[in-house]
View 1 (tube, one colour):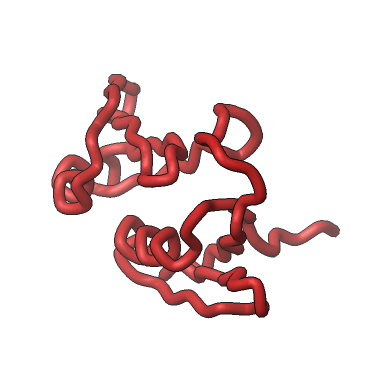
View 2 (cartoon, rainbow, N blue to C red):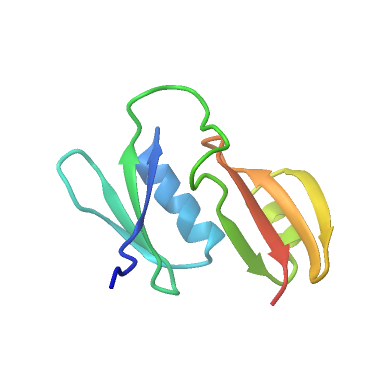
Length: 114
């Protein structure tokens, strides 16, 4: 049986990205796990995200696991608090879905659901 271990992301500023993860997930912790600065973030739900220094410049592309999805009540308020701009929104059967980019250029979406 395969078991989930962690998600890996490659960014230009590890510490800033870990702080972003703490803000967007409204909690959690992170710690440096290697001499290169690679860090492991753990969300309040125990989701682990390994944050590594990316080796090439440029914005991420829309492929693979580059579109993280969150859900919460009143996501507009959280995005406003974090100074993140909603790039587009979509209606779904369950409610609104808002698309935004983080400071690394990664596209996320957040659903207005409990």
